[in-house]
Image (cartoon, rainbow, N blue to C red; front, top):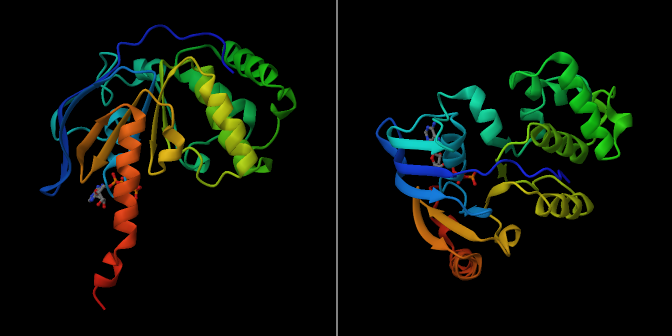
Length: 247
Ligand SMILES: Nc1ncnc2c1ncn2[C@@H]1O[C@H](COP(=O)(O)OP(=O)(O)OP(=O)(O)O)[C@@H](O)[C@H]1O
């Protein structure tokens, strides 16, 4: 998809990084370094996945410890972070802010300090590279959900970040779009960190981290971590825990 390999990235470091709100621990103090090419963050609803994404992205600051992304402080080094980390959010409508495809693609490049002419040229080149030159002047509102998702991915790729963070990348996408996107993502030279509750997305990954209650429950190669996660989720699903909700 993007044939230029980005410069080597030293990785993401969590150093006793924790996050609490009003005394409630959302993420307990996490310490690890993310350096592998394909990393999955796996966990069920409420386990802390989105909070971890927000911490790495600098959208929230850790309440204990620190996070660095290629040596940068995500909540402070905003401009340098654009070349270090790109985030594909679950819902493209939370990401897209411009009315036309061309403007949307040019925006990140302008933020990186490129001139208007350079940004426009790079946006058009990216569309041509993916056989979508005819999208340039199109209104974003005329694109389907899957097309908007792809536009968001293109907007990240034109900035050539060293790591891409994907938040439940296939929610709301139909099967052909999922298959296409899987193929496109697999071909990327960047480090990918995929956050999901669905272990199927992480098959073949170098490393899977299983989050539970804001803690790392398991961390290792995809196969054994996914096998244990699936068996635990099946056991939980077989119980009638929901029956305990107050009436
Ligand atoms: N700002 C906040 N204030 C209070 N509680 C919060 C806040 N942010 C997250 N939480 C709580 O922390 C827990 C983890 O939330 P988080 O959204 O990170 O989980 P998740 O694994 O992404 O869940 P899901 O798969 O359902 O999106 C949840 O119980 C959530 O309600």
